[in-house]
Image (cartoon, rainbow, N blue to C red; front, side, top):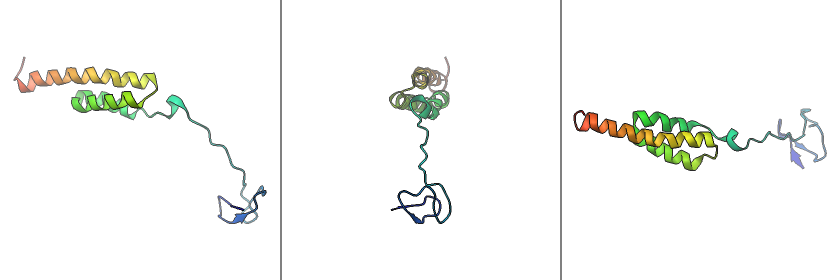
Length: 101
C-alpha cells in the first residue's frame, strides 16, 4: 500500500486516482537539469566583484570557482578574477601603503 501525495490517505498500489480526494496517483517525472544549466553563476560573479573591492576575497572566490564549475564560461570568469584581484592588490599597495606612486 502507498499514500496519496495530496491528502495522505492510504491507497491501493494499482489505483489511478485517490478514492478520498480524487487526485491523480501518477508519478510525474521531473525534468532533469544537467551540466551548465544546474550551475549557479553566483561564485563567479562574486569572484569578479570582490576582485575590485576586496581583492583577497576575489582570489579566494576565483580559486573556489575554478574547482567548482564545469561550465567553461563560468570557469573562465573565475580565472580572470584572480589576476585582476592581484593587480588591484598591487595598485592598493602603492596607493595606500607606500603613499603614492
